[in-house]
Image 1 (tube, rainbow, N blue to C red):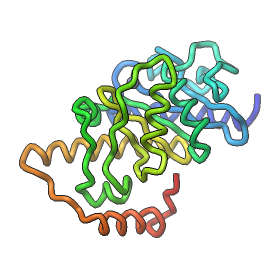
Image 2 (cartoon, rainbow, N blue to C red; image 1 turned 135 degrees about the vertical axis):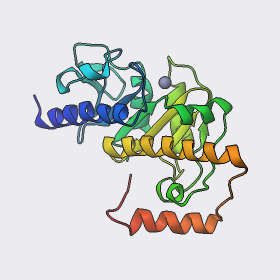
Image 3 (cartoon, rainbow, N blue to C red; image 1 turned 180 degrees about the horizontal axis):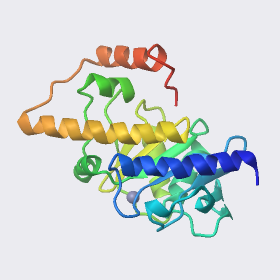
Length: 222
Ligand SMILES: [Zn+2]
């Protein structure tokens, strides 16, 4: 088997444990995928397999239409949405989907998480936007993700009444965005219980985001 695919299988399998570690998932909900560099392929979780049974060997390799190329199980039921993102956003190397609690609480109201924390300006550079209500089964979810995130600084979208999809330059970056999305959704929710969070001026959001993405640590390009 191709060494690059083997590496991506291991990465995707390992990153699923991060969703568990950060309490972003229950039961078998949630999934991580990665584009296979240099190939029109993605690696994604099998459908309905418990997190503690995920291994590099049982990850599913699909083409960018979501058809299985290698794998014993059916791929995640969200594979079509992931594949749509890879087809339409060539810079994206990883996609994550969760139903994490606080993010879903915002999604259920169809309300964007406002950018009211400097850490959020760093990571997201904007509000976390809401995408359309869409049913599983065709390209509606994928189209909603791409239409909302294309040209948006945020790597996360709250799909209305559903959950979070995040994108990144690779799968690790997409997992980081999913962790950070839940963290800020929780904090801003808590702030709302006590009053109205104070806005940050757009120029300051721009400055924070530019510094963090271009100067702080290693570049966080996605
Ligand atoms: Zn879902």
